[in-house]
Image (cartoon, rainbow over all chains, first blue to last red; front, side, top):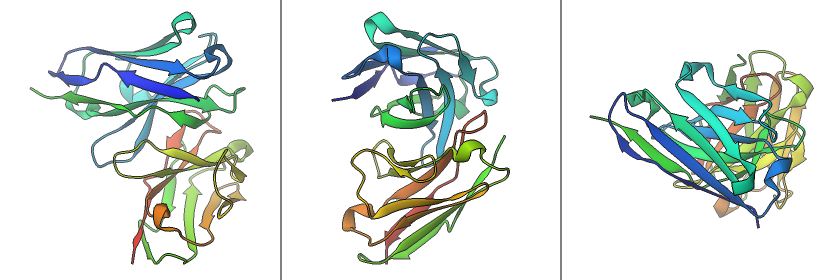
Length: 122
Length: 108
């Protein structure tokens, strides 16, 4: 069974940093691109970042303005999102998701984690 | 970036009704790379349709997707009680990938 489990969310002050993790199981991580998608409270979905299986291709939403860094460790079956210079507008549930079909880096998302809440507030 | 517009914003229907949800793109979606998701309160989204017309694994055949270019439709042939939720479309044919604002299907 494919599972994605996020962790690392919490309350952080504006300007602070946070590192999210996503533990994957039930599939061979090296065969898939992975992404982060966020959802502000009561709002819609926003794609954040994607990383290819080999890490050769990495994409970010323009709105992040270079503050976030996506990475992965295939040996540890894990995906990460380092978030720096956090702002109130970054407050959201952050989901990790598996990209479908396999040949795409930016694709649809066929499996999602349960999400981790990041709250940026003083 | 491609902007997706979904209509209507809310659809009030009864179990057994047919639901027709629209997603319109500001530019043509390359390779018809258009997906539909269902999201219930407190849950992660669930992939229903990819490539505009292909049902995801385990999705009942009452869900169908159609369309091409800039106009896409999700149809639920007969609403079941568990289908009342918010539905999002997403295009992944052009970078950045973008989502529509969602259509809420609620019980009339």
